[in-house]
Image (cartoon, rainbow over all chains, first blue to last red; front, top):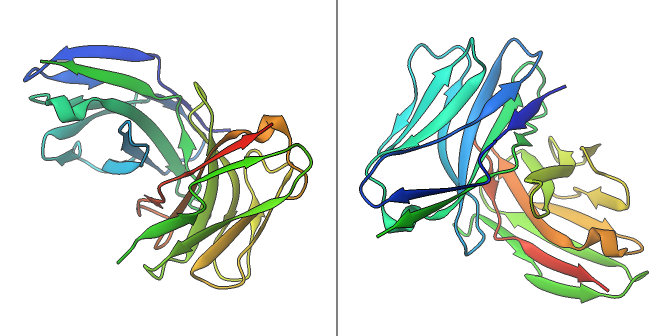
Length: 116
Length: 113
């Protein structure tokens, strides 16, 4: 069975500072992908970043980077230089790549508030 | 491109009533999904489809049915609504499985009284 755990229900960060959102996972699939999505208060789900289990380097997309530690089964999202618009809920999700279903398993989410 | 659209955006049902939620995508995606989002529980997969004419059960399928008669549309039906089905429903689509991200619709907020 696959499971995603986000242990931080809510976090605060000062504007312009960096913040790390934690995500740990469990899977028996030898090949898998990890995704992060952002959900602002307006409700839409916005894809941020992807990391494959066999990728040699940690993924980066602009101010977003993924701190992937395979042995520890963690895939933490790092947001650098936080902006007020980063205030939102963030979801970590995982997909096993051995099956062809494309199903995503989501964590419970972390609410991030950026302080001016 | 409109991306993924959902109809309606809001709906209030009485217990026992039925309704259909419509999801449409214009990206020629093969895969489509229905999730529900409840406070503190993230998104949970209800049903999904890996291509036109196919459907499969997800994590929480009870009380829901789906159909994918056309590639661009994925319908979610509630035959006899229950208060436990009060939730926000999201439709998503992806080009394929593998490393492709899912694109989400804006959501439908359903309240069952």
